[in-house]
Picture 1: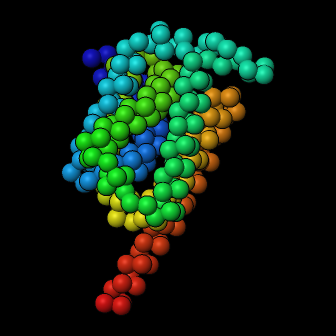
Picture 2: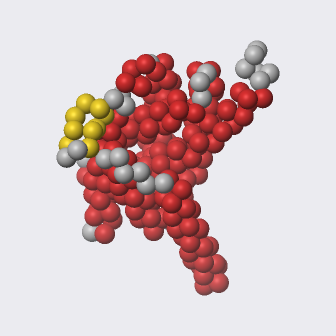
Picture 3: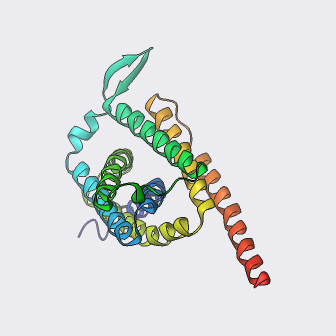
Length: 240
């Protein structure tokens, strides 16, 4: 009750929820791209599983705050740069994103058939879930460490994570459908993943790239692509 009636608690909840939503943009983009490789029915299930896992990972990580804070302690030193487990996970996750996005871009440029056609659908579905788990762990870790730095009450952190996850779930469906229906948008999303991967690797090596620059680039490019989609749609109407 004390938290419910506290203006400071509500302000912290709103601020942290907004931040969690912004940090979740990366996860939504990755989910939208990765599920486009499998049939629509499986894609919807994979998206639901992925977002549920994201929520579960965040709540589990919040429940082990002491261990999580310890992840920021240096464990190895590379050329005078002290790396913690958090840094190592961010570097590994960033490299995974870069490799995955580059592989997908190569496939789109070479105009290959979808992976779902090359191997059994059950195997494709399993591989998509594995990739979602890997990237969920990376994004969850960064998100929760940020939450710990902004709020002191575990109840506020969990509430913000649950609200942000619900908003991610509601927005991921339309985003995934839009990416699947517009191939050029998928290429743009893959380019975003490369950019996000580079930012994660840079963060791991203590070179912080302000997220505002990255999200502005994403928003600007998405707005240009939206105009392109509208222009194509209008040209089809005129031609029809």
